[in-house]
Image (tube, rainbow, N blue to C red; front, side, top):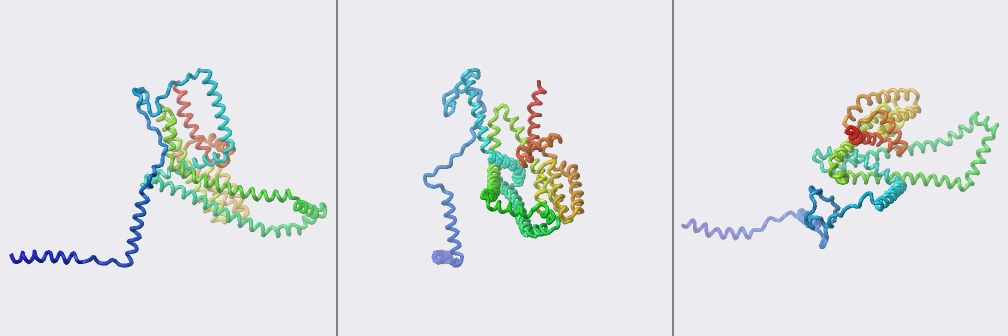
Length: 433
């Protein structure tokens, strides 16, 4: 009893003593950090909360697919918010035929006018779509590696932008260096030519020096000629600015197209009739997949081609090897003829270092082109498009004539898409007759 009494009497006292004890003071250096963390947390909570009276942004969503469209409408409420559509006018009605014919002609003229006035914008859009279809397999591969689609898009587009920036970072200093050397050496070259016996003999016979002096005086005193020089400089500057602006627009459009590509496909499939939607989707996926595989495969082939050319140029001492490697990579994107053009161009540049250098490069590079055609390309492009050789050559020439380099790049994917549609639609329909 005494022990229980003592323990019970000691309990409240110990509790009072423990209650009177204060927690250990925190270090002075950690107090500002804790306060700053608390302020940041409260600010983050406030930012997550919507503003008073704010409404969520309206989004235009795809209308749901109706499973029983042919069953009819039983009640007025089942007809939808705006009611059920009425019967269509007969297509044989004269008023209908005349009105629709007029509308068709007007729409055709409007499309022609818009296309003729927005040619540059259409080229940018086509380029962005081509890049999007080429980067989409990379983004989907990153998604398969548990990388979010937004992060995959940023990684793919950033890699492309860095490659373009590296090309221009190599091109611009080389051009500036060569122009500077030409400007510095030009007076020396002119003086040597003037002091040569050949020029002196011609000058004695035809009076070349006096004629050149007269023409220079006329040119300097002619305001139209000086204005033409100024206009040429301004035109070159505007061309460079337009090119940079176009590259920025293509980059931004590629980002948007990559982010919205699944939704764009869904919208496109919904434009087809429901009875044919599955077939349209299958054909479209086959075409876009083939184009994507072609772009990726051609990029790999171009990188290997440029790498081999750079190694050979570095070994044998071809000038401007880095710049020429970028040019080879760009031309290698053009199928069939791009490698030949790149080889001839680099061989001509190699002639400045000696005919032996040019001969060695030509032998090595054109031998590599044969190896690439029979061993590298068939293995890399086995999942890409397959186009007959004659069709490929005609497509590349026609695309280059219409749209330049861009047309040559998209010629083979376009030809493959046309061949697939002919095979699956027209030829299949003809076989069933």
